[in-house]
Amino acid sequence: MRIRIAPQYTASESFIRSLARPGYFEQNGRTLQKGRNTIKLFAIRDHRYVVKGYEHLSYINRLAYGVFRKSKAERAYCHAVRLRNLGIDTPTEVAFLETRRHGLLQMCYFVALYSEYKPLRPIMGPDAQNPEAAAVLEALAAFLLRMHDAGVLHKDLNIGNILYQEDGGGGYRFQVIDTNRMQFRRRLSLRKRLDNLRRLSCPAPAYLHILEAYAKLAHVNTDSVQLKGTVMRLFFEMRQRSKRWMKAFLKKRIHSEKRD
Image 1 (cartoon, rainbow, N blue to C red):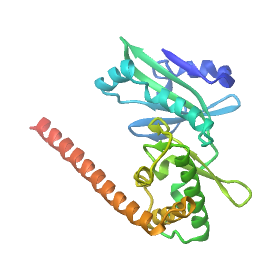
Image 2: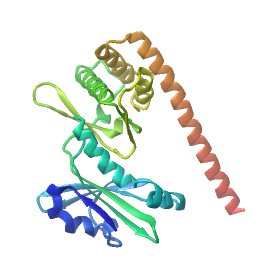
Image 3: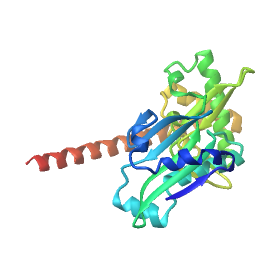
Image 4: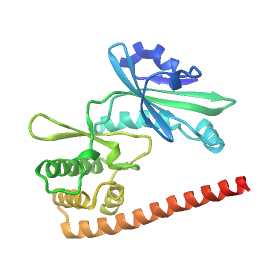
């Protein structure tokens, strides 16, 4: 077992170590998300912890993460620390834990404090001109610009991985989650920024509103940014649909061959 705990949360070491016990993660906590990975909420003493369990690792990934690369849980933890140092908010990192067998990674967990921030997706309707929605989108554009100015590329930058909260003064604060896939660079070109923004999975009116606000704040041509951003998003979505179609086709083909 390999474990790292933030100094201020060493009192929770017993709980964090319990994640390595067979069946503990599966049988305890409240499930928030179940899919390729599982996210659960645990209430331990005076704290609420969100634990992300990275599951379903292939043999190649068990070997790669066990020997050559940092695990997803370790990267999520380290990236959260780095984001905070750059002034980009994310739920407070608590720990990561890995279990191994014969040098191969078996399971890994990233632990963070539960955030009171709300999901952004529910307000991303088709009406981007709604006053509340427009205010959030413009504040979001400013947050994304600040993140890019800091050299941060979130490689899974979709609306589901951004949380928000009113700041009490008429503005909004944001947090990014799912921090294991990130890059940190000294400087980002406009093309790199638009390439990153194309991943925003929101309705077209909201996406165009974000691009417009982003361009104005960055003091670049609005029409050019919206045009380039739209074209890049269209190609990205076409590629994503092709990948999904190919996966579904192969899955159906394999299932058919097994049945025969």
